[in-house]
Length: 389
Ligand SMILES: Cc1ncc(COP(=O)(O)O)c(C=O)c1O
Image 1: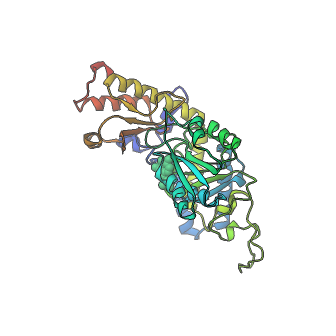
Image 2: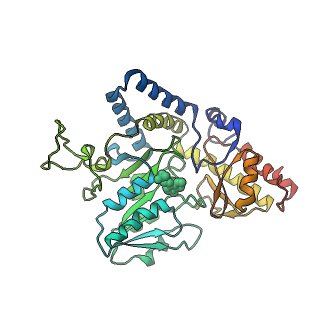
Image 3: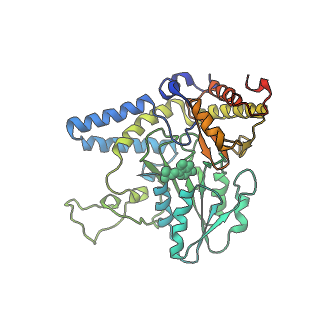
């Protein structure tokens, strides 16, 4: 049951739900049948015709357009990449940073965001880790760390390790006031939380597509706000150029870059995954991210209620405004809980501060209640019997 959409119909598209209690969408999505069928159809075309490449490339542009709509962006502001890390590295190397400049990151944020910027230390760029002072990262937290040489802030929209939802609108406004670049890792939020790229104030947003966008690993997206011609790609290929040579002979005399995100796209793309994304976007559009977010928040409210009843603490924020709708870390030691849950066909992730439960659009309130009942079967919780009834 869901107050927001026909979750039973969506659930029927996810065969994994018949085999296990899948509470690990923040790790990777299970595939929907429509997504699997899109991949099979692509491979069939590839095997029977060796690839109608012009048709495939037309479809790439159609998918780019749908993604742009999802993010409230223009198609020319979207590039396809390999994953989040590639997007973050493209961003870090594209910014016009010089020795003595500094960049602010959040302490404990995803390492794939941090290393992209730490790698700039060899150019003399300083990386400052800003400690989290409250339940979430707010603009005020960064203000004392900004000085005359601060050039950028980079952070996750939603954290993987405790489900914080950072206030990117306010941090984006702070960046505008201080003329800082703003780079966002939206790996955990895209497809789950509505993202308005235009309103966020972000210069660049990177994400992979194997969680909330519901396709297998190996495809990423990068939003690059229009009009930032000063951003230079570290890598270049014909596809980065405004006027690629029609005779395929490289020349140094016309290397003007494509405007927008296209300058960061190099070589052939992950066509199978882009076809899969066409199908997964149909699924996501049929529900809408506001409804997905609202449903997952309902599941989170129920989970918190059950955990309170069982005397299990929550690591990370409780308030809807500060938390992601789908990621909840339980203050339970990874050993023995991860093995115990695996033995009961419950898929969760071991996380740095406990057991991470994460929901996908196919999970239901019944899943949450079932999970709470399974927790009581371990026999070590200070549970009130009624809590998991
Ligand atoms: C916030 C965040 N960023 C990045 C990544 C992973 O990066 P990539 O897409 O490069 O594998 C994850 C994956 O778990 C993540 O949660």
